[in-house]
Image (spheres, rainbow, N blue to C red):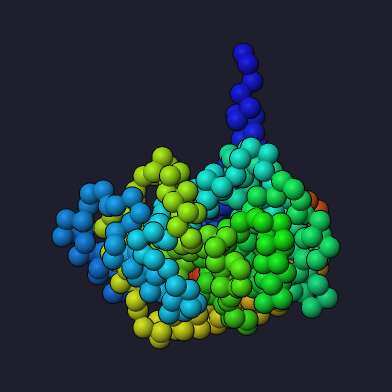
Length: 388
């Protein structure tokens, strides 16, 4: 039998670590601080709008690019918060979550052999999408500095660019590290994109979950609007991760390329949920500031507990997540530590080494999610005390 190159390329992508750890939580009754999903529902206005749309017959195929109400709401939202001007008819596409948007963007823009500069650790779907496109990852490693904050080496980033570089895949705020890329870091990335005439695909699903540093879209930097696809979703900001409503915005020619791929992936999705997300995007500022404040308090609560339990806790500037060093507790391998943690303490976390090409850089680090109710975090912290 002839070996299929695509089958061979995808062979390394088995069951995700999220599925494994969530199943472990169910099997052991452990508190699941591994997978990043909230344990509360989103804003009532959004839920009511979804119920109304379901009952009102919005249950058939929506337009390929998304319903006009949602596309207009996305444009208004980007203008309101980030000062980005878009055309709702040609520069927006609604997708089945940010995951589809990332996959469609990479498949649309990359040819076999093209290179994608990305920052490791990276969300696991990035590697799979790059591989599906037949492209090649060029990872740049984020490492904790003396203050614990993650940063990259400028020389390493410059060296990652070459004649086959097609695009930079950037996630900020960054999962799993909680890093928010600084204005100086973004300016360097923008400069390299323009020097090497490459595209940028930016995953900004945590755009409103920033605690200690402002979020700056790369697309807003000089020279970047016409070469950047900006991706976000409703899942994180509105606590509806199961809805899978995301979007990509950018210049019409890039959005058109994404549309051509998307039509053969999901075609369309979430017809009765799209009007509800449009309502959510137009909520007053108080919703967004209040949501961020709640997550910041959750972060501080979990960080204090992890520190008391003996972990080496690294700063989290944004997202749902905080990473911790297991070496003060005698750990050396994150996968092994996380598989044993439910039995030792009744808590599930996620090893971050699986999100690296260079796994030794993250072998001692694990990730905890704090997008949970305060009482759930307190329960987890109480359980983790037995590690100290």
